[in-house]
Amino acid sequence: MRLDRLVCVKYNDTIPKKKPGKVGQNKSEVVHELPAACADEAAAVEFMEKRRWGDAPSCPRCEDSDVNQMRDRKTGDRNGRFLWRCRGCDRQYTVRIGTLFEDSRIPLRHWCYGFWAACSSKKGVSAKQIQRQTGLSYKSALFMMHRIRWAMAPCDVEKLSGTVETDETYVGGKPRSKGPHIKRGRGTKKLKCQPFVGHLTKDWPASSHCMRQSVALRADDG
Image (cartoon, rainbow, N blue to C red):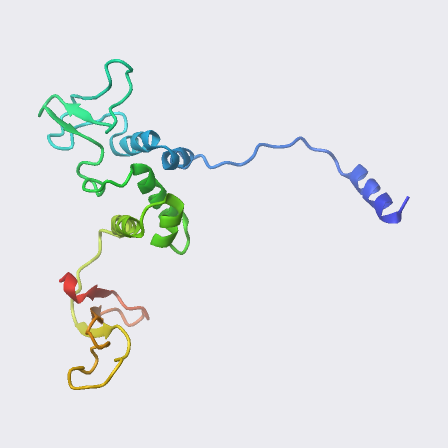
């Protein structure tokens, strides 16, 4: 018997054998339901309804709780559009009404995956990655990610006050050619560069080396 094998045998004999323990799992209900919601449209709709209404669904227009799901009379399955009917205002609605999904035809399972990817990724997720994973067009993936980032942005941002500095710049590269029609700082020949405006508050305690707030806006966003 080789020496290395003999050492391994003796080492294994001296180790006390333990019963295998349970595999650690995340106890969050959202983490368990998200994979199914990202793969199936019906599961995604039920996931969104549970997150929005819980066990007490209500009409998003009149807030009446006297509502019911619209189902097929023969099969008992839910409506293909996952509609609800409110007996208070006698109108139909879905879980999309009053949310950022309302005017979008992108399936909710892709929205669930977009939120999951944006929350779980340390450095964020690009629209190209969402396009590859979901099969959406780049335009739809970019539209979806813009809304997801807007929804995840903090809502309690304070307004700038005190001494505020404002500056602007144009981003778009150096001029391709020189001439009287090219203005200084306006970028390319066809003036396709994007103007940006920045605002900065300088009033902050001297003990802090960080600036209070800095905002960069596109000039055409107002």
